[in-house]
Amino acid sequence: MVILFVSASLNAQDKQPMIGQPAPLFELKTSEGKIYSLEQLKGKYLVIHFAATWCPFCNAEAPSLEELYQNYRDKNVEVIIVDVKEDKSLVQKSQERFKFSFPVLLDEDGAVSAKYAPEGVQPALARYEVPIASNLVIDKEGKIRFYSLLNTVSFDARLTKLKQKLDELLTAAD
Amino acid sequence: MIYWPFIFLFYVLPCSEQTVADNIVQVTVPEVIVHAGKTATINMYVSIKKGYHIQANKVIDEFIVPTTIEIENHEIITTGEYVFPICKKFKLEGTSDYLLVYDGSFKITIPFKTDERVQKGKYDLEAKLHYQACDAKTCFFPKTVAFSVSIKVV
Image (cartoon, rainbow over the protein chains, first blue to last red):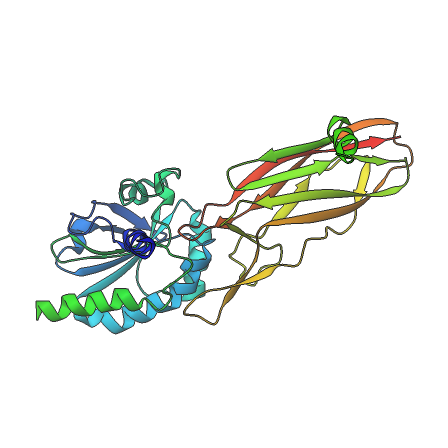
């Protein structure tokens, strides 16, 4: 009985939110002023990582994100980072550090991040705080197909599960 | 039964300290009594809510927000080097990296010397604890807890 309860709790915790839902629309600028929107990226598989420069888990997976981009960019996959509520100069410094070759978008007021906060998750937090360090995969039609919220205890720095999902989607599309 | 009088005394004696807390961190600072021109130590007792950790004072990654203490620049004291506790290593799974963190309860001490010309009396210095916390599911935006440090010059 206890084992069943614990197992159910763990499954509930691991269950990905918002799967199959249309990804909330956004239009954000890079630190250089270039505008990117979800509309404009439709037709591609899109990996979104919500980040902040002070977030240790975001920084730990940053090299894996760049590696993912290099390995999947020719497979109709785009990668973006949405940086939440931070100063442009700090974001630029972080970009230089990790040598990102994909866009880093500035969500200056946290409004986009708040739209991606799953309902009922971490209700005590400000909505824009919830997606920090999360990874999503949006499909070509703009639907959410993968959403991993941060789990600091079994942290997936190498993005293994995200890559599995991408491979699955790409194989199905062939 | 024999211990009751002592317990009673412990609770009825005025305990001059200040405790300030937010939903993650609690800071308690007992009043410091010192003579003019002498040295003493401010003890800050910090308690982190169970399941959370905060970044240590020394960080490996320059982008990480370290735990720091800020005491308003008051003319009655000159502070020495702040002494933070020994931190723990928090392994970042899937990488060779780790974070230096504090959890549970710990003490930060700040040695200081009062100015020789300072007048007797009680001085409340405004102070701030800056920190960035994470738990199993979230990393929180950097926060600040404001509190005051009472120094009584006798």
